[in-house]
Image (cartoon, rainbow, N blue to C red):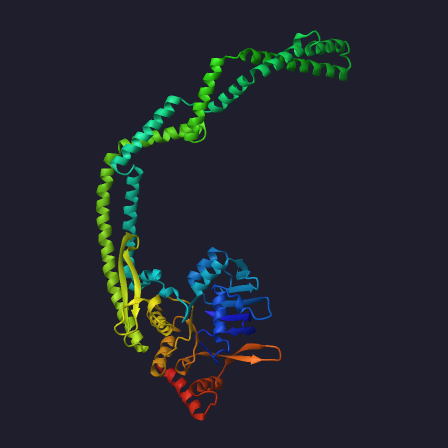
Length: 556
């Protein structure tokens, strides 16, 4: 339930805080005083589209905070999943809009996206205004709502449909994995066989591409390498002043001084260096001897390298990946060889499961249509009590491809006037009709579609007298499962209220602003009397108001 609402700098509101009761909260007051602004503020903090024009004149931001308590398990689960639940189990939604249209949204003090704020808001509050569509009236939700009304009987067969659909999909996937129909399998086998032949003929070796590249680079630079190696060979050992000869001379000169430890260490290091240089010299000789340029060999290696590059580009990007792919397609070809037998087996299973799925979907559809008829009769009865005597309401079924949800698509259709065709609610119902329809459907579905707080914005528009009493009684009935916050100008509806908030417009020397007062005792009677007879409250009106309040206690 909505425990408190704090509003700052929204239209005429400077700063107010409202503490709501858990039952039927009634907002009353003169037209234009700011009652709808309070609802606009609530919808804003619940994630509705921001309207920059609502920022109070002269201010650079507006802010709304809403605290909810006694939240449902679905809300708790969502908050826990997103690490947003506080220990006390309360939820505080906060939203600030700056004059540059920047939004700051928070849940329990933690910054969240507008989308997440809206998701939580929709779980906490259903808003029933003449100008808003709600979850109950969106066509995409009608089938789920109907199924919920059907209870365990529909749920059990719906689960069977879902299980059967999963089996059918699994078998279809097995057939698809085997290559589809016979023609497709033959095409696949032909393509894979060509690829196998191409890869096997190439006789790829892991690491071969890199090895060939190194050899080709060597051949391409053979002349330059040979010159460099010959120069090194001469410098190291072939010339009269080779490096090795010079090191040996140094060793000989130092050998007579071996009794000096530091000099002997240097001699030993020279010996080690000579051994290392001799080894380098020998390795360079071997490289030079192997480097004899063979144009035919170079061309052969070049063709091989081009072939390998072409194949790895097609089959994975490296010799290793191409070899892995070869192993995979060999396995797939082997599987395709056995596919005819397996597919015949799967197709027999599919035929059986398809039949079972069709049968279950038909059973589900029959049960849904039975439930839909019950809903239709109950809604029509509710609407007639609400003064809509010529109402026609139908659940329009459309056949759709079978899914885990069955084969039905459902949309609630409606006609308020005799002789008028039923059409989509959004296209047919006027504001007042839509409000009363929402009240009727909420009364029917309140036990299965529980929402903590329900908002009614002038749902009594266009009605009066005994119909107004029935509307008030039906709204009061909803407090058994939900908190109600309602704007009304009808005393018959207001008299059913538990908590009353009088919204008024005030002026000071500098500005106009909205105030909210929580009415108590005689103040409630006086306000209902004002709603009955106008600003000049008579004793007759006061007596009538008290009688209305007393009567609601017996009706409720």
